[in-house]
Length: 214
Image 1: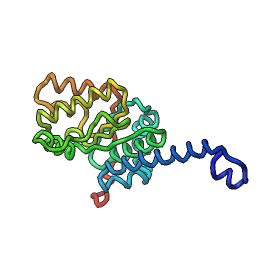
Image 2: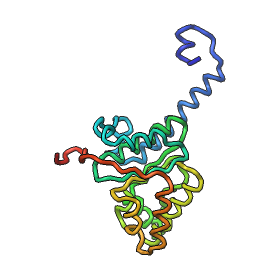
Image 3: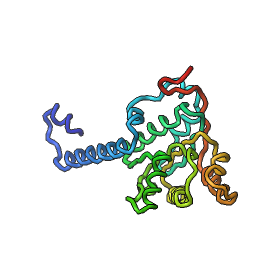
């Protein structure tokens, strides 16, 4: 019985149960706050804003893949800019947070900047292994340095082998992003293999970002 039900019915409640519910609520809010803090300000609204109906209607396969995603899932969302990849990924992370999992958002360009600073002796870049759920946004947007490539490859390998939920978004297909990330054919092939080990889904539609030309 919930705390509110006890109050409304003037029924004795188990104090331990009340404590457990309060602690669970606090922990859930802490997980959500940490995820929102990892999001750029413009993307924070995605956590509370439903995805546009036309995006869902046009991309039924992506919607089904997200709904079926487990806490061990690996999903690659690809498509043109503004079709809703990041919005869908954020909403799925929120669903998993509500189930008790931690989540983190990482933008590739910002992450590589943090990696570059770390390589120069600065603070370590955020861990891409620790969170239960990781959104890695805009893979292939920027060509990585050798050091950043090592960290990216380590992330893909560790999250896949440890069965941690990972959602990657990119304007490029997995086959196209491999050569973009590495000039070494063997390394590029290994990256593509890991990206294809989960489920890759292409999104279609117009650019839905505010101010975009129709």
